[in-house]
Length: 312
Image 1 (cartoon, helix red, strand yellow):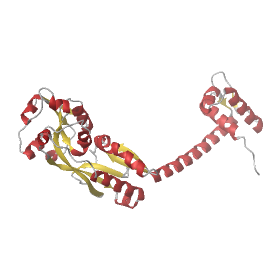
Image 2 (tube, rainbow, N blue to C red; image 1 turned 45 degrees about the vertical axis):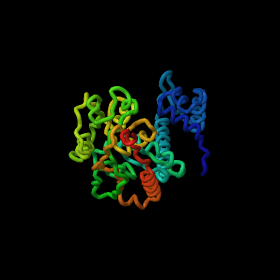
Image 3 (tube, rainbow, N blue to C red; image 1 turned 180 degrees about the horizontal axis):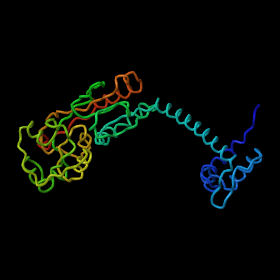
Image 4 (cartoon, helix red, strand yellow; image 1 turned 90 degrees about the vertical axis):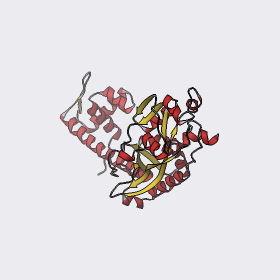
């Protein structure tokens, strides 16, 4: 037997049952209160049962209304769950979730994502950021971009790119008073430091740069510590001090003229950027597309411009 059920009325009644108020139900469904009232009346007449005890501020279900309301809610909930699951499956087929540090995402990855979108309009990249303090699990991301020594046991790991270290500052800081032309001039400036470089002796610090470059650091007028690499870079761009530039994070700003290299010494960092994923993800076509793309972007990264001394 086929029953032509009044679905619009059932939906209106469920909203009143759940919200206990005709006005609230009308607002949720985007119709007038009188339309909701009419739908409920139609349903009651169709069933031959009173479903609601109407009050000025609150409407309570009758026993029959309670039974029907719960049945509708459960049914709609199941329909909603199925719809969400279907949408998520479709989205999962088209979305690549990448986990990386906020500084890398902001300064290197975000500016290049448009290249990916233009080349692969059928795919979408979602970015989740974390501090990198915990081991990569692969539970919440398809691919991780990690900074460090590349030690991720049990995962597929390949180096995305190395980094070089060198001081950077704004052009106005270098060329203004007191100026920054020789290393001894650093004594008159604020030195910016990233306080989240927790790699022990392998941390790419000012001290590491000086030791590898064979120079002696003067005592700066002040040191300003910041909690993220992108904050360090932005502070340098704004002329708030001199930062130790980490190549991938500053190369675009250097080529855009927002930052300059006051000194010529460049050293190789002990740390690199690594692509990390579960071995099984290598069988995913969308992951392979992303890996191919990002390795090409890394290979085509612009060169480091010369320093003031090199250009003199």
